[in-house]
Structures are given as C-alpha cells and as structure tokens.
Image (cartoon, rainbow, N blue to C red; front, top):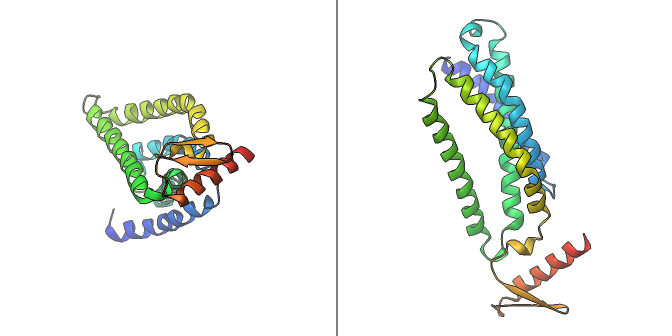
Length: 203
C-alpha cells in the first residue's frame, strides 16, 4: 500500500476517533459501556480476521479499499469507545486529593496488561503451524474473550454499583451524621465523602 493511499484511508478513521468519546461523555455507568464495547470488539474481530486472511486474493479488486476503510473505522471506533469507558470509570473513582496520581496508576496498569497480553499472543503464535497461526490465534482469543466476559459480567456490574468512597484510600468511620477521618484537617475531602455516601444512599 502506498503512503498516499494509507493517508487517505486514515482520514475517516481519525474522524471516528473523535466521535466515539462524545457518545459516552454524559454516562454514569462507564463499566457497562465497557462491557458493551467489549462485545462489539468480539463481534467485529471475526470479519476483520477474515478480511486479513483473504487480503492476498482481494488486494487488486475494486472493493478492497472501501472494505479496508470500513473495517478500520469500525475497529478504531470500538477500541476508542472501550478505552474512553475505562478512563471514564477511572476518573469517576479517583480520590480528589490524588486524582492525577490515581489516574496515572490505573492507566499504567491497563497499558501493562494490554502489552503483556499482546506479547504473550505473539510469543505463542511462534509455536503454531505457520499456515494456520493467524486463524488459530484469532479464534482462541475470541473464545477466551467470550468466556472472560461471561465470568466477569457480574463483577463489572458490582464494581460499577460500588459506592465511590469505597475506592478512596483514607479510612473513615460513620458516626451519626458526621464522617471522621484519620486526617482531620482535610475538611474538603471529608465533605466529599459525606456527599458521596448521601448520594449512594439515595440512589
């Protein structure tokens, strides 16, 4: 593929990356959106894998580039939607006092897990038959993703419904209508904990 064609293909893909985060900007359940985008990721991976497998036979056809743009846009949309949902959840549970540090830690752990999974798949692919390595790897990942989502769906819902103050580091105890903390001087944080508790009780 020439550089000119690659640049033209990336234009609609870039537009999709702008649209995806806007869709969930007001959501209060980012983990639910993460689960939905994960399902979309599993669904779109099958036609994309078939497209890649048959690329040598289609590359000279007229419909090769339109399909390439469509599949790249769909894949990028799902990936950005999933990442935005994750970051949105991280932002919603981050403790106000150390919000930036908390976010950095969580995103780093996410990137570490993604890199380890990708490296493991590429390493295992060396052991597979060369002719069918791609098919076996993609099929195995899709099956594993379905199994993981089936076992993790309840956990995702439980984590989404967990009160925000449960994610905070400062231990606190509730006495009547007041919240006391190990760090009494940080009144702003104590007030935020009270508001979070009252909100969670109402909902």
